[in-house]
Amino acid sequence: MTAAAISHCARCDSPLERGDLRCAICAEVVPSSSGKAHALEVQLLRCDGCGAAVTFDAKLQGLSCAFCDSLMHLEVLTDPVEQTESWVPFTVPQEEAHAALKAWLSRLGWFRPSDLSARARIEALRPLWWVAWTFDATVRVSWAADSNAGSGRSSWAPHSGQVELHFDDIPVSASRGLTDDETQELAPFYDLATAKSAPDELEGATFETFDVQRSAARRRILKEVKRASRERVQQAHIPGSSYRNVHVSPLLRGLETHRYSLPAYVMAYRYNGELYRAVVCGQDAGCVTGKAPYSLMKILLVAGVALALGLAVARVILAQ
Image (cartoon, rainbow, N blue to C red; front, side, top):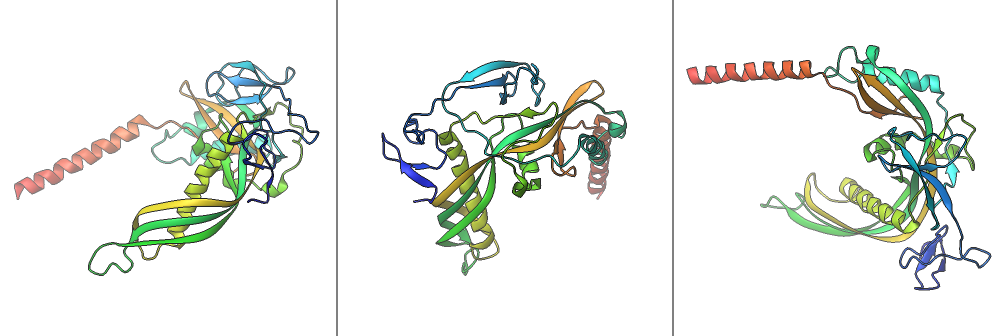
């Protein structure tokens, strides 16, 4: 039993984690400390394009999505939803984020247009907080794999074992506005120790909201627990120098989740009439991720040179 499990569901007797609004097994609403069921109605803006949900504020929010610029519509959720517990503050000013985008465009590599940084025109720069869970977990992992250790005359030998692993502050994205690749790029650059109980005042900022129940969050977290367990086993517990057919079965012995809002700048820029998106970490301007165009002429040039070399080698071989 995890230390965070403080009660049991009144309907199915499943253990409840601290902060649960509904039972993860039967979806029964968890009573509040007053003994009454949670009654929560949330208004949010839902993007018609990427599906992101952001807080509704008639004064501050526009009708276009801060993530993808699509139209948004008002949505009302009557079921209990998760809420941000901690807000990681911005430490990168907007001017520095703007400069970071230009620097990123200039170092993307030879296959990009030579004038990309000079001609790219930033059309929008929006500060926002995107949402993520983190989890601490203690896991008993049973594993099995083939490795070259002790294989004798064969290439592979079977191995198996059990190991107890502990994970701290493993991030799991809850964002719909940012892609999984973008959030994985950004996550390592945040200092969770700087988190506050409320966001700083920042003009024009967008606040993404959690829009799934704890049960759905737990499924994502358990998937990440299995992935992280497999990675740890492969790194430190399978004997030998090579392995295959790795299987892991994690058994949770403790799990505690936390809900964070993390700062970033989403930038829309245009090059040769096409619109692209980049994201700058709100705590480290050195972390920039996003989309950028390729130079078709450079790609064709390299393909042509490779073809010419291939034909030349073929002629030499045939001549012999």
